[in-house]
Image (cartoon, rainbow, N blue to C red; front, side):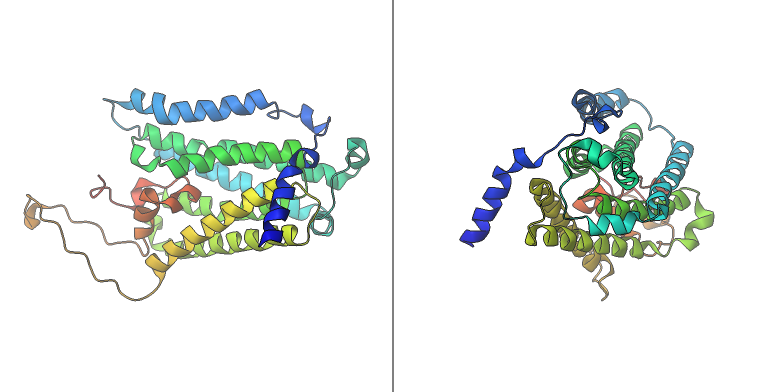
Length: 324
């Protein structure tokens, strides 16, 4: 244990030496720290202060069509990132074979390699996708779903913008590209589900594959944990503070999703909770529609931690009558 603590302390002490910049990449849009700080601060101020104040006394905005367009765009964008990296000749092999190498101190040495450019470009486009994800929260605010804007939801979105920026600016093309590649595929599947769900009742019978979204997430986090643990175990000469941070996030998310999955889909019929008494008689109460398989999923994640990784949820998929 003492040896492990000493090694972790050494890794954090070496942080300044590990972080490197690239004069060429630094010229790309969005990499100025003032720009990224303005985006994050503006997001926090709007979602936590200005937005809720602006919506006081107003009806929730009807954003069904904008959200359909938004989810469709997210599907196309994430699928494009996945296919672009996968279809680049030698990119995946190059990424795996060089995962333990340190980026050269001389940017020109690496910049001449077309696959190095592909790695850097993918990291930048991934950063753009994390900025686009901020609209998930903005939609909630404009629809007066402030109860969905939990601390962990906001932390997740804001922190990933910062992490994506730090990766492109200081690490570039090694450590997180494989994770981003897999994440792009996962987000393609998720946003495709949300796109279909937003279309209305006609497609609801075809949405029974919802539990598999959680399974895909669990596989993603299991990979992240194993991948980053191997980098640290073999002492790969890459910025280790980044690995520790992403590993901690991966473990946290895996635990949250596993706990959620076991409670929601773990088998065994749960005993129904006693119904609350209402003033309105049952005869005059509006009947709830037949539950979609696994629809409790949305109730859980909008009030719990798992929600942070499932953006763009549609109101049409669940009933808000019980929401406080």
